[in-house]
Structures are given as C-alpha cells and as structure tokens.
Length: 187
Image 1 (spheres, rainbow, N blue to C red):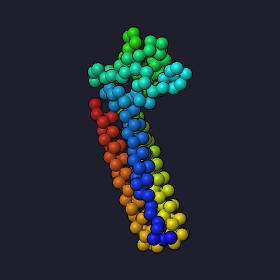
Image 2 (image 1 turned 90 degrees about the vertical axis):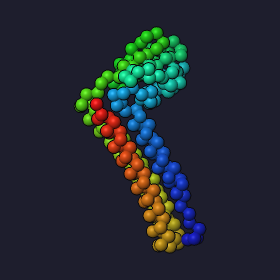
Image 3 (image 1 turned 180 degrees about the vertical axis):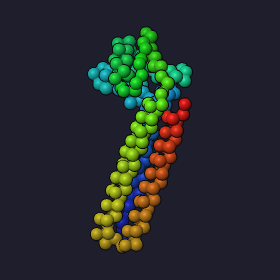
Image 4 (image 1 turned 45 degrees about the vertical axis):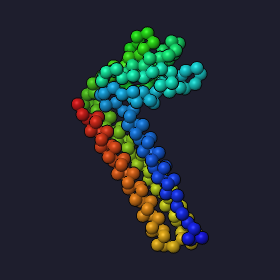
C-alpha cells in the first residue's frame, strides 16, 4: 500500500488557484477612484423573476475615466437596475438618461481609501485561510496514508511538496494585496 500513495497535488493547486481567482474578483469590485466595468460584476438585478447579473440585462461601458454607463436593453428593467446599483453598497448614485444609467465615480477621500485598504486586507486574509484549508486537507491525506503504511521519508517528501505549493500561493496573495493597496492609495 505504501508505494501506491499518490497525493493529487494538481487538485490541491487547482483549489488554491480557485481561492486566488475569487480574490481577484473581490479586488475588482473594490473602487479605486477610477471607473471600471468590473466594479458592477457583483451587482444582481431582479429581472424576470430571478436574480440576474447586471451585464446580462444591459451593456456596461466606461466612456471616460470617472464614468460608468449601463445601457439597459429592456425599458421595463431600468428602474430595477437603478435600484440594484443604489442598494449594492458601492456608494455610487446612479443618474437616469432614458435607458442609459450613468454612474459618476466620485473622488475617494483619504478616510475612504484607508477603509478600502482594510477591506482589501480582509479579502486577502480570507483567501489565505482558504489556501491554508486546502493545505490542511492535503496534510490530512498524507497522515491517513502514513497510518496505512506510508514511510516516514515519503511522508516528509509529500508534506514539503504541499507546503511549497501553499507558500507559493500565499506569496502570490500577498503580492496581489500589496498591488491593490497601492492602487487604492494612489491619488
């Protein structure tokens, strides 16, 4: 049995990459004072009886650095889209112009920038926790294999492999956080 043990490091890596992809999505939703279509990705609209992503009820554009527009395809949904944006917690006040909803992005003050860096830090910590949970799952598999007869040398080899993957992902998360925080604090 001991020679047959193969830890699926690709699976562990894939799960850790998933945590990082989620972090990228969360970072994209944080406002940095510049307009970005991705900041509306988490906004869901109650359209036709179900919650629908905003980009499936209209076209999201960034015509200028401090403006996002949403061109709603169905006139009946304009009010619902406006309400969804207003209640999204983005701190943006939508302005209607027919079927086009304009979202002027206000300048961020110093206090708001500091709050956003803290939020970014929380997102990064959640990603680190997810990566460490995947690491723990891998280590548990190794311990189980040790109980089933895996040699101590093989155990150490697999544990160092899992730790190396974990360290690489944690380092990457820290770099992403540093980049995002400097982007937020940039005036």
